[in-house]
Image (cartoon, rainbow, N blue to C red; front, top):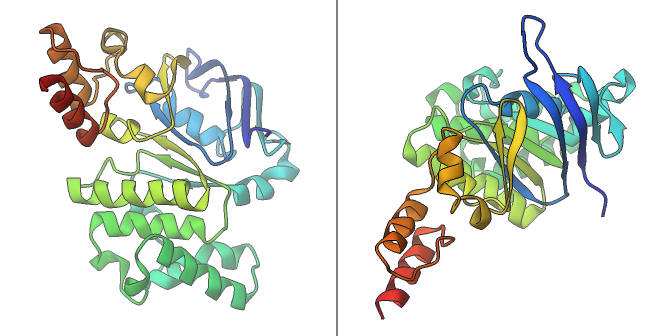
Length: 277
């Protein structure tokens, strides 16, 4: 199976920057996977995300989406149909006064037939659990609901990849849970490739793969169970570990034989119970 996104020796320097925001990044994103990207402020994670659907174009190296080079202007529309982006603030992505009109906005601009737009809008709102709010005004929704509407607007373009740049950063805990549950279901049940930029360790723990960025480079790359037990390496990169990992590491230091890679609260509790037995 070929990667849906292939990044080869990618470098990028902002016009007013003195050092590269991305410095020789190479990685493949496989179809149907859930990848979380972590990093402290200025690490390059959002810059990387914006290269995945050609919002930014490389200063050097290549980004290929389904084999299409983002630097080729003729590929732009096809790339953005395949890779949809969701940003931090849903208010910046909502453009209409009625939820279903907002979700219809992108496919209308792509020239999709009206009957197909109706089908896509209904399907997208069902997928994010917002169909019952289709006639509501977006400004009356909660933050989590607005973000799910923003995700539906991207889904209506029928993308293969969903890139989310810190989509829960402005949400309360309930809104975060709503959005993360939606994103997981889209990946696990519909097979949409997900790239989640986040600073929440518990969100990254639910991914198949964790990339840790530092100074424009990939510092760590692996499954969550491989990355999070490396607490010293993460702290050196100004990051923390999930609460479950922190607890298990403290118990291990005290002599309890528990695995450091039990990431979910359920797995953590089961590991402690087994050790106590």
